[in-house]
Image 1 (tube, rainbow, N blue to C red):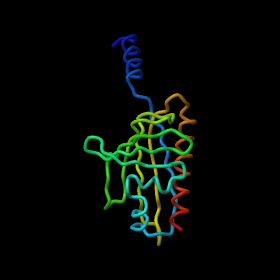
Image 2: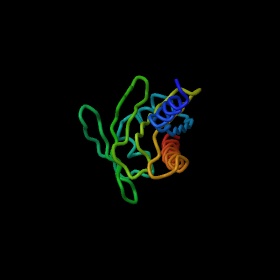
Image 3: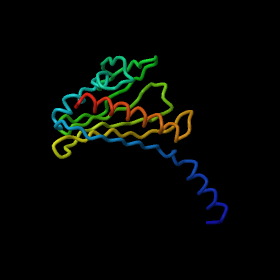
Length: 157
């Protein structure tokens, strides 16, 4: 293969490679048992009770999956669809379908695991930045996760 063909193949491979996803993972420990912790946060629309930025959560269906519309304090809304759920494994995953957030192709999981006499709650997501730098998009999502986990910690004392 000539140098030109090799260079062209390399450029094509770079152009065809999707943008790398940004990943954010945040965790907290709480003193409640995993079962009690999951009871508080496991409902897909439960986020309306424990996340301080959510004014209201409305549950619906989208195709064969649960969907929630989050009305945000201060205005705006986010439409999300649950993609996986394991009550036994104490986790659920979801995607964002519509939002004002600077992200696209957003996929997230929230889970509960045993940690000593209490629990660890982990919220992780991956996404592409949209209309912002990767660092800014990660900062926004980190703030959302930290506020939500802080709300859970206060609720689960």
